[in-house]
Length: 418
Image (cartoon, rainbow, N blue to C red; front, side, top):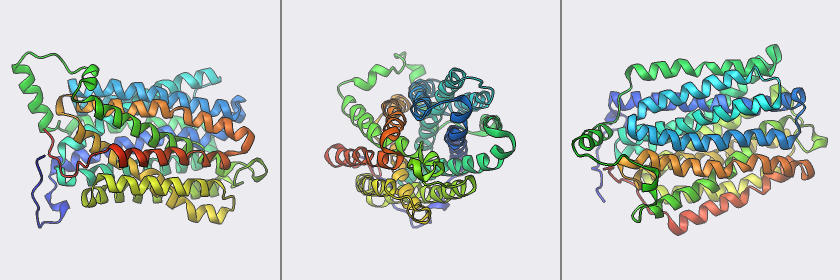
């Protein structure tokens, strides 16, 4: 395995203008993706009351979005391998912003379900396009950091969703919150103007045009040389995302649900504040994971984050005191979110360039598709035992993720892509 050379320069002085541009493009798209997707969670209590949904139905609509995002991720992964990372990124942002906007016109549960389903296609596509763009543009020794910063944008988008809902919902209701979701379309236009394709992808396209070859197909992920990485990446993604989506889809509702119904009983101002503070912890988790992954390796960092998440999430679910939730929340988000920074780098380091985005898209979004059941399962369990108790069930997923890393994941720190 080719290794990178050591430099005495500060890492940020080694980064080129094109690399920064790619980082900003991917990060912006991911932050706004998070905002558009999480707007639903922020207004879920109001939507359920207005459209007469129970918690199981509310969770099922979140599940629909995650299921379609799995399809979108696989689809846009193939688009990114064939037509380019930036084109795929731009198109995915257009899709999720338009259908978030249309959610505001929903008059029935069915209409809202259709718009959330279509929104998910763009949501899934954004991650794979952005991950491929970053991992191929940035040098191997800084790849973990770059993906850490990109992934940290999710926390910014999540917190921004809480702020948007807190400001707009009292004035224009939950419909106005969804209307705000059209804003990301402007970022897609900016990306189209000046973000370059990675040189490694351009080189691959030039070489493939000289030699007539079959276009990259999804089936190549199941060839004898690749299938073990496909299976490992998909299994790890299932466990990690089941824990995340089961928890963070329902946290806003948990904070706003009355104490006598199993929640924390916070008003909208406190709920917004608690979520913003929690996502501050998540931001540090994403960034810290990236730096640790480049320093001590991918495996050790994954194990640390998964084990801590498995320990902290049940404790959070058993906590109902507002002050305790405020103090514990950032740590839960730090370890319960930060591990996502490792997926872009590790999956990129397991797959070759010609099917890299397809591999990333399949593994990450296959996991998301299976994990899509988590919000529904937690919502169903909450009807009998409460949301807090249902959160404890998610510790199993984090523990299984840690075991997968220990048993099967190779160390890929410093690997030069080819």
